[in-house]
Amino acid sequence: MNSVKVSRKAELRVESGHPWIYSSDVTDRAKAQPGEAVRVLNQRGQCLGVAHYSAASQITLRLLTHKDEPLDRAFYLNRLRTALEFRQRAVTNTDSYRLVHAEGDLLPGLMVDRYGDYLVLQLLDQGMDAASATLTDCLQELLQPKGILARNDVFVRKLEDLSQEPEVLAGEIPERVLVHMNGLQMEADLRHGQKTGVYLDQRENYVAAARWAHGRALDCFTSSGGFALHMAPKCESVEGVDSGPEVLKTAEINRAANGLANVSFREANAFDYLSGLAQARRAFETVVLDPPAFAKSRANLDAALRGYKEINFKALKLLSRRGILVTCSCSHHVGENDLMEVVAQAALDAGRTLRILERRTQAQDHPILLTVPETLYLKLFICEVI
Ligand code: SAH
Image 1 (cartoon, rainbow, N blue to C red):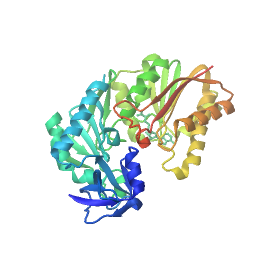
Image 2: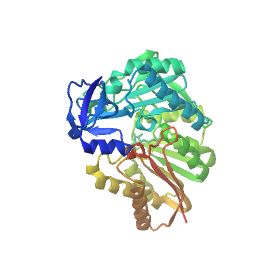
Image 3: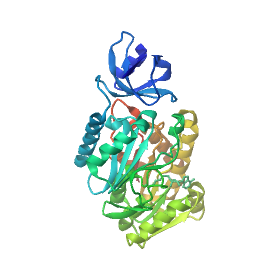
Image 4: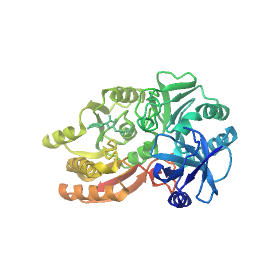
């Protein structure tokens, strides 16, 4: 195994429980090759652990273990088995869930989503990309899937100088896969769908939202209809809005498959649509806001916060007393406090008094590692107008 040397600063970071070492903290790369496992040494030559080396990214090293051990088949099999055992304890009422959540499962650079008999991987750095065949082999041993797909068409792979083409790694991947979640049936387009097919991270939040939903409901940024379909049995009517025509086709298929007659979907820009509803003096008892990440980086945080405030303000204007607002942010750069402040400001401007009924985050199959803040990205409040 090749070795690389890192600065004292990097060593302190590793000691604080964070697996990333930035390019500027690597003092000697020696013969390290792109994507290989390397021994990480401090300035005195002591081994801090073994990492994946990336020759392209600003994150040069991602530590997988604090021991001096090879990252071989047995290593990956053990990590994957541990991840699976956690899901067997944590996940209920679904055949689809995130099996590996990168750092949250001590496997930086790797996401694995399970859709029944099919697996979808995201290999997000050079190290995991190089380990692709071994990972495929281990997953076959553990789960005997009918097909394994690598959804490698993600932007971060560009930062790693990796191709951006999806690839079938084993078996076959059908055009559509049926997902059974919380008693509902949903279609997932594993090859082309948003994320890897379904927003698995909202799975537990769908149930929470449905618990409080009532009356006339509006689901903004509905995608394939997750919140809308879950809330339908509790509501008089549900309208789902999204700007993407493709996801709305799936939403409509899901609606019909579950025999939910009180749900309708509409293609529109949610910002404009909310304004139009206010002008038409329409009222709702429940509004869900699950927008895409407005803050892609720290640099546009202010603009993002203005965006969150605007949609929350518009949504609150439509809500009557006892109305329910389900509001989310999946931007990692927007903290829970940021979202809380923005919603509070929006409520003041809209003349509504809100109480928080639930503070939530991503589903438990997307585990949060306490020392790696990046693993916590989804924030959600369920609020009531009082
Ligand atoms: N609530 C969904 C996930 C939403 S993801 C679920 O649980 O499945 C964000 C969605 O917002 C995407 O489907 C995207 O197509 C949509 N979107 C992005 N910008 C939009 C806009 N301005 N108006 C309406 N929809 C938008």
